[in-house]
Image 1 (cartoon, one colour):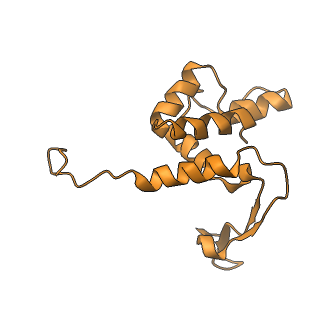
Image 2 (tube, helix red, strand yellow):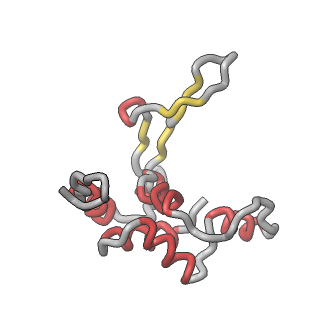
Image 3 (cartoon, rainbow, N blue to C red):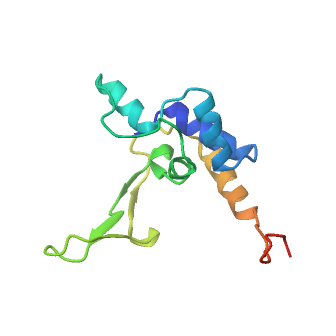
Length: 134
């Protein structure tokens, strides 16, 4: 569970060309609670998870790719092989059901689209064994 402030900060950070790692460092420096701390604080309980209480780039990436912040409901994200085997498999985007505008959007569609464009335009290039760009 992420707050609206956390989602907006992450998307605006990408928009000004910061990496998810840099955004995570900035959120930690600013004292923004990690999602699990935020969740348990809203419940009025201490966080029972063993955590460093620091943001990670993976958490920021989850925020950046979550359609919920656009006000959409996404269903069938995962499936199981069978009712006997409980192995969870992530569905492709085409197989998911997206119901648009089910709740108020936290992030504007324009900002979301600009972040997607920037992700597509970033090229890491080919690297040789020493790490230099070829």
